[in-house]
Image (cartoon, rainbow, N blue to C red; front, side, top):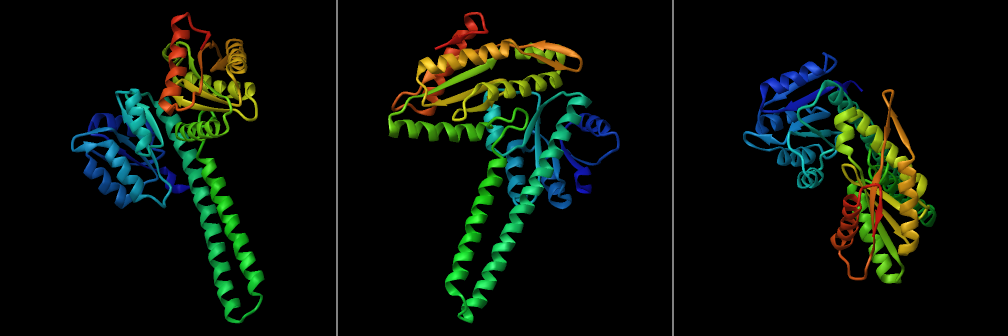
Length: 342
C-alpha cells in the first residue's frame, strides 16, 4: 500500500527526530511534530498510517495523545509506536491501557528501528484486511435487509426471508468473533497477549469456582534475559522469545493456555490440573527450554527459565493467584535459577 510509506514522528528533540528521518534512508515520506498539539494537528490533516510518538512531550504526555489518536482513527487502520528512554512495569500497563500497538526504548539503532517499522507495516496490513472483511459482511447484511423489506412488501416468502436474514446475522457475528480472535495474540511469540491472558484468567477462575475443579498456573521468567539482549542484541532477544513461544506450545495440552505476561515473563494456565500434574508439566517445560539452543545471526544461544507454580484457591482475586505464582518464581531465581518452585 502506498500510504504505508507515510510516517509521522512526534518528538520534542529536533536532533533525535532528524536521526530517525535519516534512518528511513529516503524510503518514506516523513513528517515531524515537536509538540502534542502539533502532532494531533498533523495527524488529523495528513492521516498517516504509522506514528512514532514520544511519551514525554513539552505540552503533554504521549499517553493522552495516543488515546486521542485512537479515537480519531477509530475506523481507519493506524499503528502507534510509543517511545521513551525509561521503561518499567507500570509504564507497560499504561502503554497497553491507551491502546498503543508497540513500544521502543530510546535510544535505538537503525536496525531496531527498521524492525519495529516492518512489524508495524505487517500489523497495518492485517488491520486493513480485517476492517475490509468486516465491512464486506456489513454490506452483505444491509443488502439482505433491503431485499427482506421488498419481499415483505410483496408478502413473498416471509418466513424463508427472515430465516435467511438470521443466518446472515449469525454469520456476521461469527466473522466478527473470528476477526476479534486475530487480535488476541502477541505478534512476537504467537501466544496470548496480556489483555487476552487476563480475560482467560478471569474466565477459568470463574469456571473453577463454579465447578469445584482444580486449576493451576505457573509464572515463567527467562533467566538473565537482559544479558542476552546486551551480549547478542535485541534481534537475538526477539529470536529467543519467539523460540520460547514454540517451546511452550510444544509442551502444553490442548486444554492449556499460555500467554506473554510482559517482557520475558510468561504465564501458563492449566485447567483441571492439580499441583502434582502441574509440577510435572512445569518440569517438562524447564527441561525443554534448558535443552534448546536458539540460533540467531550465526550465534548459538543457550537459555534457561525459572518457574513458579501455584494453585488457584476459592475466593482468590487474579492478583492473589498470580502473585503466589510470581513469588514462587522468584524463589526459583533465588535458589539458583533453572528451577521449578511451588
